[in-house]
Image 1: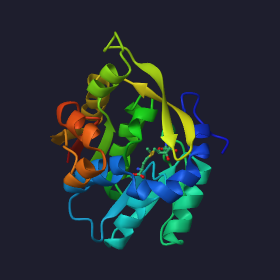
Image 2 (image 1 turned 90 degrees about the vertical axis):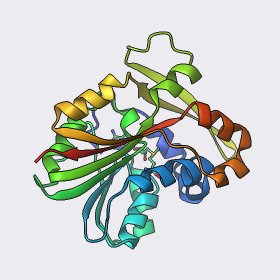
Image 3 (image 1 turned 180 degrees about the vertical axis):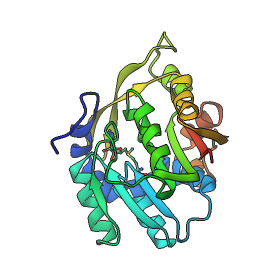
Length: 241
Ligand SMILES: C[S@@+](CC[C@H](N)C(=O)[O-])C[C@H]1O[C@@H](n2cnc3c(N)ncnc32)[C@H](O)[C@@H]1O
């Protein structure tokens, strides 16, 4: 893809983990028993709704939304992820390679009911463009549901001194036998929620979800930690009329 924004990160990382995503992420406890139950608890009725799945990765949400009767478009900056999602949904919806740091000008104004952005916004240095675009493409009272790294977790886990800074951090994820370096942007909560509000949304729900009992069975130590230190923040917001 030619039009990659200068601040876009982790494309190579997701290239490297594409096969893992295809084979394992559906059942990875962090996704299956922590992130997804929380996101799904925030979703409104999705049957016959027009939904944008942002940062679709391996397409778990894309397929879930299609299976529940939604009219879906999926986007991701990573070509391999786009191909995996296409394979999973078998041409039942458009899956488009595009960078969320740029304009989503292939989507019409006021045309969507829901934007779902699961674990993608922490890859953006500045979320302003994304929220401005979500506002443009959503119908009045359309909703956005997103999950994002919890700023508390990032400060504690990465032992950062300056909460107010916006900084590029690097983590190392174990993916099967491999270790893959992933970069993302840590930012204070104000730099997540104020751009949302400034771009015409009001917040309906702020969820600091607990993992499920299945997560406790698989990863008991992480479960106890997550009860005290949430990894992800979940937000539901509505576009003003
Ligand atoms: C953690 S994964 C998302 C997980 C996915 N929602 C799921 O539940 O399986 C993050 C995804 O965001 C994509 N991504 C990162 N930066 C992006 C950007 N600037 N524009 C669009 N997609 C981006 C990555 O390529 C990756 O596929």
